Length: 483
Ligand SMILES: Cc1cc2nc3c(=O)[nH]c(=O)nc-3n(C[C@H](O)[C@H](O)[C@H](O)COP(=O)(O)OP(=O)(O)OC[C@H]3O[C@@H](n4cnc5c(N)ncnc54)[C@H](O)[C@@H]3O)c2cc1C
Image (cartoon, rainbow, N blue to C red; front, side, top):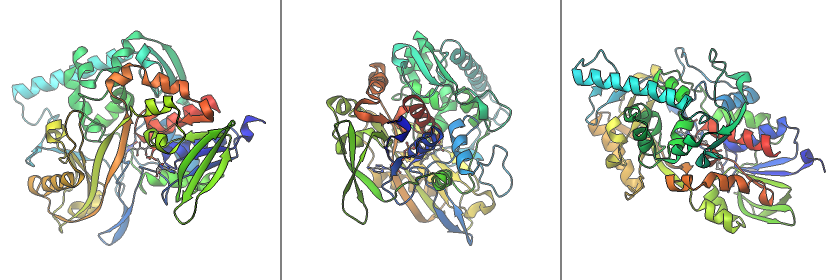
């Protein structure tokens, strides 16, 4: 049977699962099914509509932003016919303006040389600039090859994957620059297994953490003393980090969820919603997948191949996982990222998004790190999303309810924005990754060796990083290499 006639099951209708379907179609595959347990696609790209100021608009409770380096997301946009706004925002578009606040609510200007011209601050900013430049150079030379998607070979000083480099830096759409497979050896890459803090100290650029922390820790991706540098620098490679600093970011008018809703509408086989995969059995060269629709009994379908885009540690619980799968997937850890959308008392909310650097440290676990003000024209009456992390390696988790309390207190008492009601609150299984010691021991090479065994392929966030771009690109890579 020609490969393209294979019947393929995709578990999960998030960005990774839908991207798999898009790339399968591009390769000529027509017989696939996507199972999605919820009543919508998009996974953690979730953009509910909320009534505010007499209008219904989208608010983000999951993914918000992208950048010029979002090549695979651009391909999703192209497929679905729905495009981002920015980096130059017009009136009425959701933009990315921000300010910084101290833990007691005062506005601060840590990066503005014109405010507070003290010697200490001036020297600090000069150091920061020099170390940023130094790191940029190091990443191009000592760590050449770091900027491809995925982690194959890194622990052994090798790299291979689709390059992240934007050749067409003029426009917002990288277009023909993608894909571009690169491969090579560079023993220095082994340093990327170190926690980012240690990696920065080793390379004598500790100050740069002040730049990376806002788009990294406050976005829920963990703390620099526990996360391998590989994750930090693959997500916030030098180009993406610079785009963040320069506020050249993308947002989506109808929300990030709509990227995937529009893709789903154009697929040959849109995702089967409300259909949870509850069992997987792989026998006789086939894959038997049992699903349980929310309104019915279990059914089992047989496939030639399986693509898992959902958390692999969960997969090991409902599938006939091998010993190697169980051993490997038990090493996965994830962040506990909490957010809520709050409506404020009339004319008493913030007018712009804010970052609270002091709350991005483990000693302030559970406190609000950032809040997102999406619609400028709503001024002080714009509901905002507020975010906090409640876990850190070596510390007890802050309980979920306690985290919500701390976050509310921060917003009301420290920042001075009285909350009228919380419209929505959630905790996400966020940013699955492995600890530095497992990364160093070659976790990703063991995963790569499993690809295709038992007709099973693994995609999703763990493959590269927990953002929309890396997950869609990982799907492109898996379909490109194995189908
Ligand atoms: C608060 C927050 C802010 C974020 N901000 C950004 C951002 O600004 N930019 C960015 O690029 N990314 C951001 N992200 C991350 C981004 O949303 C994720 O990385 C991306 O959605 C991951 O895609 P995925 O398909 O791998 O997983 P998911 O989005 O988690 O999708 C997995 C899907 O699988 C389904 N599923 C699970 N188990 C089963 C089962 N047994 N059977 C059937 N279906 C199942 C789930 O319901 C879900 O729909 C953010 C996420 C959150 C939560």
